[in-house]
Image (cartoon, rainbow over all chains, first blue to last red; front, side):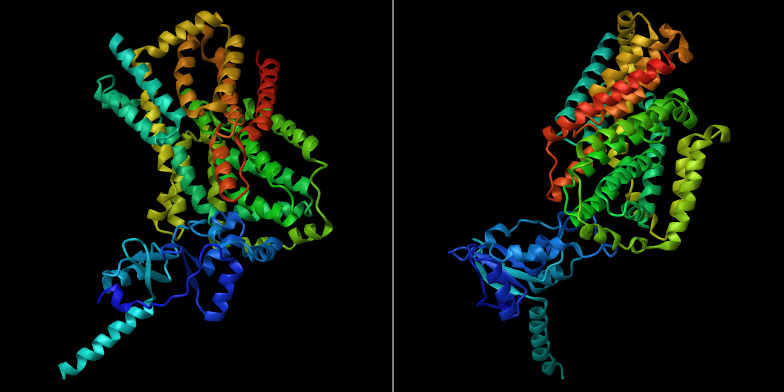
Length: 165
Length: 425
């Protein structure tokens, strides 16, 4: 079982000239949590996730982990105001801007095995929601979520079990 | 012997150049420099190890573990917020209290940790107050270095000087601390003149400061009690180390041992809190400077300096004060002090022995520690705050900081000069 056989295709993407407002609309309307940003050739430039947007509206000292726990502080006014200011900003400004210690997404090739992808999902060093499947020119082919691995393994075991009987 | 001197001096200058160049980690540079002295036959490993001051290393390692575990309890954040609320949200008193808090932490615990914990809270507070964070950050950088000057355990140069000369904690409290209080007051007075009226906040935002819940910063009350007990014991141990007949490294490492015993985190984790790069940097430097001592390079230099100063204690003290102040603004004060210690040691006989030479040692301590305030790269707290501020989106410009801080540093050295004159010379 490889990435190509498990991935979902026909993914919503946006070009870097679109705004944060457009992304948020997609988040709400399509009930998705991340949108790959691609150029005209479908080459992946980055991914916008809701977590990346959260990171940009938090003050730098919290985002960078200098102040991890702020349970003692009242709400910052900037936290709310920053969201308003984001709406019309183009996506190009958010791609790979704040590189966190754990990236929000990972890339694999279409031939990558299911076990390798599963290992990427559970690895504690990085925290990824979705894995993008790209070709050798980094053009987007599809996307894989943990449930896709399950679905495929499950189907496989259902196919296998009657033979055992 | 000629050949060995040449090698030792060359290695020293190459290492120094790499430290100033700042592209390769200075710990790696120092370790490679030290091992090359052994590889080239200038020092044997036995001699090299004799050059390492384990009292300095033990104090650093011990304090890093103690403070690392204690900061987990939230006590430093608690005090920072408590002082902001004590100031009733007024910006100027907040600046004053946080600067004093930073100075006290730096004097007794560790300057780097002090700024690392207080600076983020400061940004949160200035964000709530909707005012510029810069005067606050500047005052904390300056206060951390001034505070560190005050005690034997504050800034590393002091422990290096203290342990090489057998000075006690009390020696520093009596001879160095008084002038640091004056310098801190004078520095804060300058801030008051420049920023006192400019820093204002509306009643509404001041009320937001009062909404901070400092009790929520305490994440582990049981550990907090234990840590406070250890900290008090360790500080008491520092104060009375001479009467106890114990060196300060013994006290710090005992405290670290107790801390690891009582905290619930794994020992592995506690030990990770030690900044091993700093420790290796010190080890390498001690060996490199020992190479200069063993080969006779230092005594040759000392003879030249003595010829220049004619063995006068006052001339030497003033020269050491200003030279170390200005040098420490641009280069790391640790290699500088490591080199000056054997140099002054060698000059002592020409200045009338150790007792007569005491003012020179205080001058070295004051110059090297206070000099760190001159530029953004002058001392570790400066570098830490600058890195932190730029990552947080409020970068501190090198020149902008220097234009403000360098004159203040010169002022502090001038105050130290007057102090040395009135008190000792």
